[in-house]
Length: 355
Image 1 (cartoon, rainbow, N blue to C red):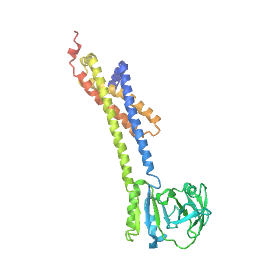
Image 2: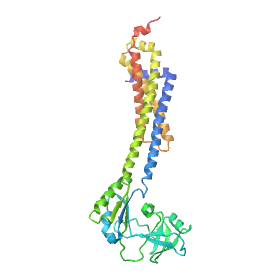
Image 3: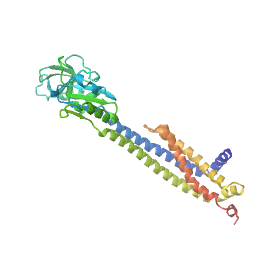
Image 4: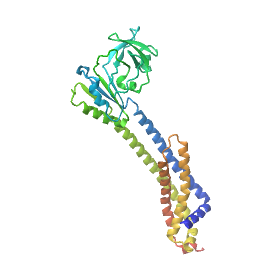
């Protein structure tokens, strides 16, 4: 093996121009493959990130308040796995900013205490509430806090909160308040936030199964069942696109290298014939040519992959980078095989004959 590599290195040194071209081609092929895949991964990650918001991961259980369901009766739902958060809310009622009778109404829901419901936004005092800052500004002419009065003349001091649960579509333009009285309040809404978008359908199915014995006309479970499928589609599209791109680049590189190797083999027929005349077998001549191409391409492909990985903001992992280098080298070796066989199988006596 060592003599073969040593001879391959000597052959590489003797063909500086061709070697430089091969290194450049391998550099470009490897760099483009890693760069395009890295861009695809970054785009897929950005798309998947939009599916990981609390609103996209929320399963909404709507319960008719006339059923008189209370917090302790839905505690099994709050222990479903894998849940990130759960909120139990009463029915919505209208409220207005105090002193602004012409202001638009806002919805208020009471956050109910239940074992496992750990995501009620914290409130500072009794009879106080929280809402998204944009909700407060919209319903109170730009102020950052508000005193609101509901339709039962209960007053609440509302301050802004960044609690992720408030971003759920079911709580759009809604204020979450602490109970103003200790009497039980019937449940109207249960929000179950899955820990990942891929678990939304699991949580929704488990919630529906847990409520199967109740009046189905007065209870509904809402979610986005397409989220899990969309997540898989995005990942599959990324992998398919990357494979297609990598295959195209490797085929193009192999064609260019193969043509270059064939041209070089035709121009170096006498050198290859001389090696045959000195005792080298056809296999040794082929192995020498393929080894020289593989070593040359290895240098270019490694450099291209490393430079691109450092430059890209969202570079693929070392496994993909290493696999890219190996594929580039393998494609180059295969491309060099046919030209090498062409040169090795020529008749040495005929090629060395002096005209």
